[in-house]
Length: 169
Image (tube, rainbow, N blue to C red; front, side, top):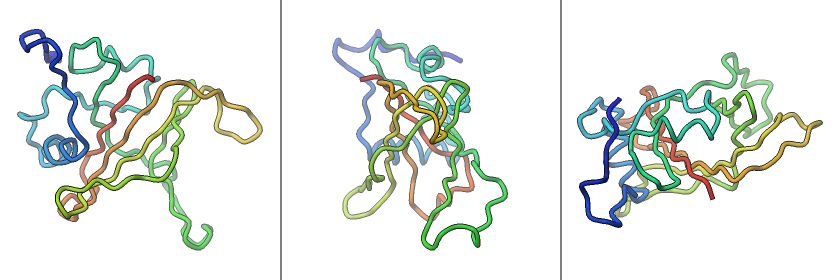
């Protein structure tokens, strides 16, 4: 895949879209198949890779410590039984386990609005090394990821479409 080079731009110019821009300009275009506007953001099975392996797979050649990727949702539990869940408990749809660890959600999802309309949600995750089983103590790392998804009905989630934004702090 060809990488987008920022060398021909003035110093200080970065690819740093605001949250509504991630949804409106990139995620929605990817979902509808408009790859001519999103070609430089690679699509990969994000949660199968360790975070330290991601920078080389980025579509933008940069020294910045943030990278953008598209990924589809992989179901964590293929055969979910709603009757066995507690009342009001939601199924976790995305399997965020890697070989070395797992991405853990921190805090509530945040709403992304454009004007007065809710257009998407943003989830923050932190990578932990080790198992997510309660009997083991996992080690929190400095790898942080922001996961975006659209909430608009015309983009019903049946299309590949999450965008992961990964960075180190």
